[in-house]
Length: 551
Image (cartoon, rainbow, N blue to C red; front, top):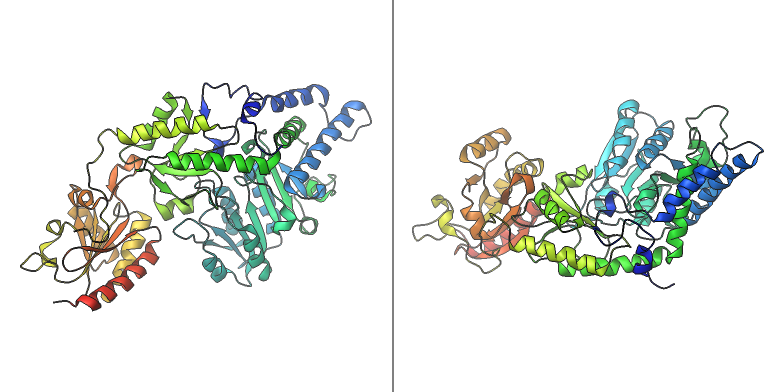
């Protein structure tokens, strides 16, 4: 089979009867009927435990063995490298705690800003108990992992590098082979959360070189079950937390405490057989890419998207907002049209949430059982919501190079008697005083303010906060440049930078303008990396000021 026959696929799901379109795959997929049937059949025919000589016990063993074999095939691993657990999070706590027995005070663990907290919290808790250091690897403005930062933070104290193979919030894929190679160069192990990768792309874990990988069956049409892979020699080197009579072999089984959830394993095996029967992961990946391309092409042009711009380098998970439409209202309206998506704040991606500051956003997740018609219906409703946003702020298109900036709305002390700027100016918009990202941005601008002034540049920050809020914000952080109150949003609307921040309302987006002395826009930046943007603006501004001179 070269492709996914989506009509035949959907016929195997009672839930996919056409009355509702599910775009909530990152939170869990729908389940084909055969998986539920397998769970019920296992409970009828293989209830009990392993280790006895009679048929029911042998049936239990057969179910467990088949599940382990199919999991190994799915991951490209060997049978004894498979570990089953209640769910990915529980399994991660178990395995990280076991690995922790080999660590000592002062050892370091690296995690990333892309991670779901299920791959961060276990390390933070372990660090508390063992006096370890957990360090966060940053991301670039396009949400890909900053490998320069990873290399800078690796050291001879690094013991593990934990990362998401695919980000659950924005779908960005991380180059797992590259992470593993860098980790191994300093003697550390690579530890991947593949919960959002496994449902969408084929895996060959030994070839990738990652030492520990975790994923969840309910993300790819199976029951709630955590699956782990560990390199055999690594697993055999660890001392598991287990009941003393429990066996040590195969290597992966030593970490499976208590009796196995046999009925769940029966359902898991049915899910793997189902995926194989519809063409396997290569066919699924190709079909989902077609669906994702259709989705991106149909989005309204007003859409604010977070993450990579195309289908390349990602799985089909998309985070977005519609200007003037609160996400919670949008998903309610979508549900009324028979479409299921999520709205939320951090989506458990605390590091990326702090980095991008999206407030609240809509998450759309595509699965292989979705259809092109469902995609079209989704984008049509999103377009309608965007076009008819109640209370939407009226604003001009965002200003670009060559456009005239509204100088009349800037402070008079920046202008000469003729109304032109005394010197080239940097005007940066930001959403709100006091948020982590806005504070880091303001503090960095203030730290480098003397360089801006020495270069002959004026520097202004603008948000919708009141003058009193600005005063308190500036005093608290020792800011040494002008903060402009745009409480009526006239300046942000004229510059075209208003954005919808969900429950926080309509605020200025994170956009920086470089203005020449005539007031025309020289350059404009949509800011993702606030620290890097300050450096970029200073470099460009200094060149402009040197060309124009200042009074």
